Image 1: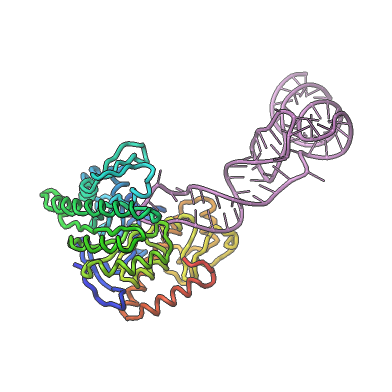
Image 2: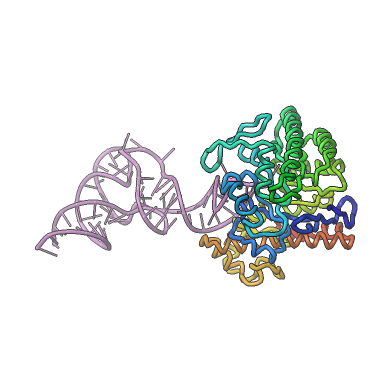
Length: 380
RNA sequence: UCCUCGAUAGCUCAAUGGUAGAGCACUCGGCUGUUAACCGAGUUGUUGUAGGUUCGAGCCCUACUCGGGGAG
């Protein structure tokens, strides 16, 4: 299922076979929380921007339109017309991001819906049931993503509970996959390592979850307020304790620089809202750094976002035109920016894989980082 | 010609006679398993003109200019 093709230091070039096709790693998953990549990007656009895996969210799809609806319509793949791999996040991040709207108990989490205030209970079993109804390729374990500034005592207790939840997730997913009427009997389950910035807690947790023989292992709870150095340090400490015969997923990360550092430390899967959200906000990634198309200096700039870029925006439109669309709040402006940013990310991952194939990832990484520190002066 | 209402930031409008503000626009910044086409910061004024009253006027008085509405 997971096969390492080549290694360079700790960095891995691998492939991951699923019922929805083979994923070439390292890979960046394109975030479509509610079953759509924000910015009016259709699944029919995804081939053109080299998307391998789409990511959706359990909590959000449960709230709207409801996982029961999606199950009746044949599952998320059919619903959104996308036949390649889909990873569903479990709702664990909402324990963090909707902190003001939930209460955590041993059995699970009580949310007040961010849409209408309705009371929603989600525990490990509910998260697995919802994800089974969505029939995603990869389900994520239901965890608590704790804030990076949480104190040690809180993190210790939280991680232990997240471990107990993981055991329940595994048991429930096995049960669901064996049901006769399950939509995807081969649904995979990834566990999630937690422990904030306390590497001893993280390592102990990594050891214990590794024994559960899950389909993949994620490092969660990073890029939630700690410094980049702390994040890289945690990866240095923890990744070696995760199973080497399973893919490693660094959740919610990150900037192009974060990804290059993650690959170097052995990460296979990444995802982040940056290319989509920043695209909608007019911040564009280029090999010379990040640019903000809202800035007045682009008013008469006839160049594409990036010279030589093959994305649908750069092949045809100027910075000046796209800037106008953004300022006029025309949907096309956001759409073109999101397409460009996802193309940039997906292309960078392709370059990373090529470099690993050729054994020159170290050189590639150094040159890429130097370039992005260049003319625009903003490290993306 | 008369009556009446109005004139304050680029725009639309606030502001007991007591330090002129807001929204939008504009300029810039932020965003890491999306509560985010979002959030934050900043620039902008001879308060239509000229006088007067007052310790003090965007506000009260007079004239004028321009505009809306009405009457003839």
